[in-house]
Image (cartoon, rainbow, N blue to C red; front, side):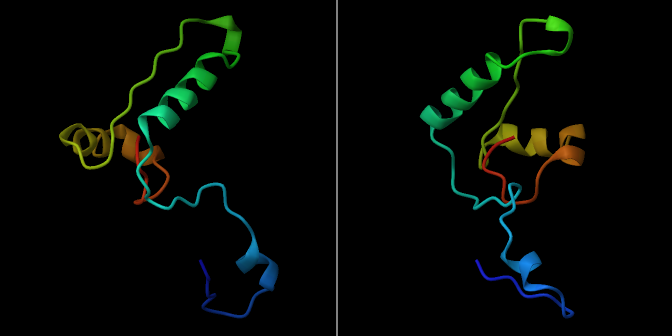
Amino acid sequence: MTRKADFEIDPLFLQRWSPRAMSGTPMTTEDMNRLFEAARWAPSSGNNQPWRFAYARAGTPAFKNFSTSWWRAIALGARRPAL
């Protein structure tokens, strides 16, 4: 993806990789399971277990409810494949 600045800036800013850049490509169930399994094994603050996760896939009725709730305030852009 080529980015264009409105004003002259160092090209380094336009060429940098952004970990928050998302393609909008749907995540597979396998990828979601791997992500949640890795998160489940991550250390928790104060060793409080168990972890609990809530998610909704883009294009589902649950996603609209999820994305219009308070989660919207922390969501990472409009092209997120899941929340």
